[in-house]
Length: 85
Image: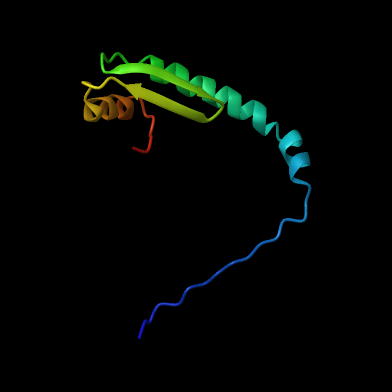
């Protein structure tokens, strides 16, 4: 028998989501942060990186087939940028 208890919290949002998006300028902020992220990723001097691309906060690093992903991750970590592989 399992001795752990699982608590589930349910929240219903009654506010206007589109109003929050406008009031908080979330789309503009996502674009600015995405530009900063791509700029910092492009500053990484690695022959293994073929291309950095994206829009807003959805970004990608294209690695050359012969490039070492481990070395790129170490360089990205050095720049204090965390990504999921």
